[in-house]
Image 1: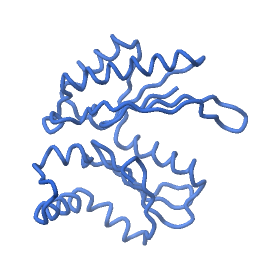
Image 2 (image 1 turned 30 degrees about the vertical axis):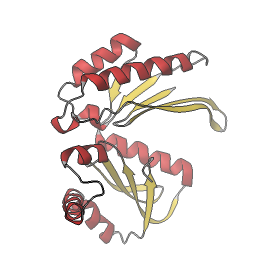
Image 3 (image 1 turned 90 degrees about the vertical axis):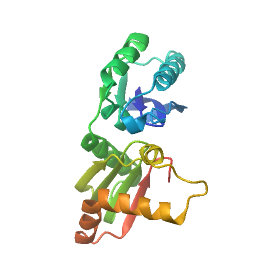
Image 4 (image 1 turned 120 degrees about the vertical axis):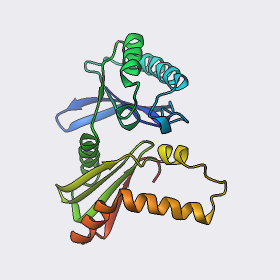
Length: 208
């Protein structure tokens, strides 16, 4: 059983292994919104902590219906950068009994790449894999079954939306500001794509 605690959602996956690999028994998600208006201060709000605790309680009820032998809980960008992450993880542990492990941006990129290979087996042409998250964006340049380069930047949409007071609908000037932000933050990725002659984009996450 795996719980992926992301900046927007808390994803639950229950699977059983077999001689062919694995069989998915259950998939669901809870909206926890760790990246609410406090993410711009690198904080997890009290309300987000409460939402996550309630999410874990719901998921624990689901897990009890299955004979789960191993439980792994990982957290990503919002928790990585939170100044109050220790208090947050302690609160989760006390309420759930689970140990939550924070994965680095590089590790997150590696896990994303492994997930893409499960879907495609291999990337026949040079490709850039982009995972648009709430707290971070991961970009991986890959070919066949090899990861050539990777990066993780704190440019996820929850961070961006809370950093800028964007209009609705968004204005042309604001679009230019965001384009400059992403161009600067991911300039190394753009350069690597040119060097590797990348012509294929593989999109991950709910945004795509």
